[in-house]
Image (cartoon, helix red, strand yellow):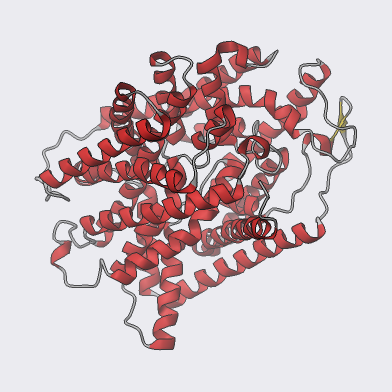
Length: 586
C-alpha cells in the first residue's frame, strides 16, 4: 500500500478538472435519490460505490468511442469523494429539521437562501473532518467500513474492467426495472394485494398490510440486512396490527374512511409516532453513549510517529474560524437566533461532529439523529419554548456531523489506495456545493407544501416526525402528546434502553438475534406496506447470500443501487413534469 503521507509525490492524474466535474455531475444525479428516499423512509444510501461504477463506465466508454485519456484509479477516487458528499447533503436538514420547521411555524426558505443554509452547515463538517483525519485514521486506526468497501471496489474494477462492466450493467438494469414499475404504477395504478383479515373492524388494507409495487423499498431491504428487515416486520405488526386497532377501539384516534381499501395511516400515525419516536431516540442515545464510552476506553495509547498535516495549521484554523462564523451568521440572518445561542450551537456542533465521526469510524453508522436530539434537548433547556432555535441549532449539528463522517470514510478510501488527502478535501467541498444546489431544488420541487404533504401515506417522512415531535415537547410540554400515548412512550423508551444495553452487553452471536430497536421504532412511523417491502428485500438478500454467495458479493449492491436510483429519479422527474404542466401546483 502506498503511504498516504507520500502520495502527493507519486506522479499520476488525481485532482483533475474532469474528475471534479464528473463527481459533481454524478452527485447531482444521485442526490435526488437520497432526498426522495429520505422523505419516504428516513434512510439514505451511501453513493460512493455507485459513483465509482458510473464514473468508470462513462469514461471507459468515452475512451473507446472518442479516444479520451484513460480514467485512472485516483481520478475515480476524486469522483466518488465529490459525488458521495453531494448525495450526503440530506444531513444538512432537507429531510428532517427544515420541513419540520415549516410544519410547526410556517416558515420556509426560498431556494437561494435554502441552498446557502444547507451549504454552510455542511461545509463546517468538511473542515472538522480535515482536522480529524490524522487523529482518527493515522493514530487511532479507526476502520470506517464504508471507506474500506469503496477502496476494495474501485481497486477491483480498475484491475478488472469486465467486472466493472458487469456491475454497471446490473445497476442500469435495476434502475430501468424500478423506474418502469414506478411509471406503470402512475399510469395504471397497479393493484395492492391485501390478505383477507380484519382487526377490530379495520381491514388489512386499512391498517396498511398490502403489497406495494415499490422496488425502491425492496432495494433498500437488500442493503439493510435480515435483522433490520425482520425487525421492521415485527414493528409493523406491533404498531399497525395491534396498537393501531386498539387505540381506535378506545376512542383515542378516530377511525379512517369506512372504505375497506383506504389506508388509515394519516389518523393512526399521529398517535403511533410517539411511542415509535421514543423507542428510536432512547435506543440511539443509549447505544451512542455505550459506543462512546467503549471508544475512549479502547483508545490507543501507543506512541505514534507524527503524521504529515493534511492542511497547514494556519490554513486549518482560518478555515475553521471562517466556517464557524458563517454558521453563526446564517443562524442569525435566516432564523433570527440570538448571537449567544448561535455561537453555542456551533461550538456544540463541533464537539458532537467529532463524537459522531468516532462512532461512525468504529461501527459504520453515523448517529446524526442522536446528535441532533442532544442539541434539541440542550436548547430545550437553554431556550424553552423556542421551536426555531430548537430545530435549527440542531440542524447545524446534523449537517456538520453528516459531512464530517462522510469525508472521513472517503479519506479512509484514499488512505488505502494512497491518494492525496488535501485533494479529497477540495473534492468534498465541490461536492457539497453541487449537493446544496441540487438537493435544495429537488426538496422544494417534491414538497412544495410540507404541512399538507408530509407525514402522509405518500410521504411518511419519519425523520421529520421525530424532529417535529421532540421540538413540540420541548416547546409545549406534555400537552403536545395525544391522549393515551404517555404510557406507550414509557414502554417504548424502556424497550429501547433494554435492547440497546442488551445488544452491547451480550455476546455477538446472541446480540444479533435481538430485534433492532431503531428498525422496530421506524416501523411505527412509516406505512406497514413499506416495512413489508423492506422485509421482503432483506429476506431475498439473505436467501441469495446463502445459495449464491459469490454473485451476491459482487452484484447485490449494484442491483440495490439501481433499484433505489431508478424509482427515485423517475419520482423526481414526475414531480418536475407535474410542476411544469400545472405551474400553479403547490
